[in-house]
Length: 147
Image (cartoon, rainbow, N blue to C red; front, side):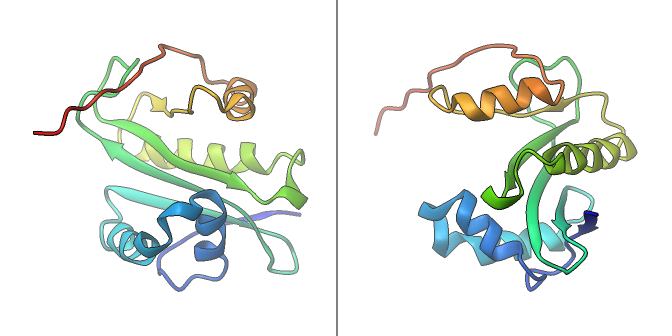
C-alpha cells in the first residue's frame, strides 16, 4: 500500500533524492528551494509517496500561480511544478495518487484548474499527463535575447 505524506521540512526522508533524480542539473538549488517551499505553505505544497516499509516512491510539487498560466481561464491556478515516480515503482498508480492529492490541495486553495507542462520531446511525460486526465492546450517555443 502507498501512503501519501505532505513534506513540511527540507529534511523529510526521500524528498531530496527524488528531486535530484527529477532535476539532476539543478543540484545546488534543491535545498534552498525546498526550504523556501516549506516556508510558504499557503503558496507551495509538496507530497511524497511512501511504501509500507517507508521507502520514498515518488513526489509531486505544486504551486499556486496567479500570473498568466498558458491554456488556463482562471486565477489562481494550481501548477504541477514537478511530478516524479522512481523507476521501480512506475505503472502502479502512484502518479495518479500524487496528482489526486495535488488536486485536493489546489481545490482547498480555491483553484478551479490544475495546469502542468512538459518538454516537447518528452513524449512519456505527455502521455502520462493525458492518462491522468489533462488535456493539451497549446505548444510554445520560448525565446530570449541578451541585453
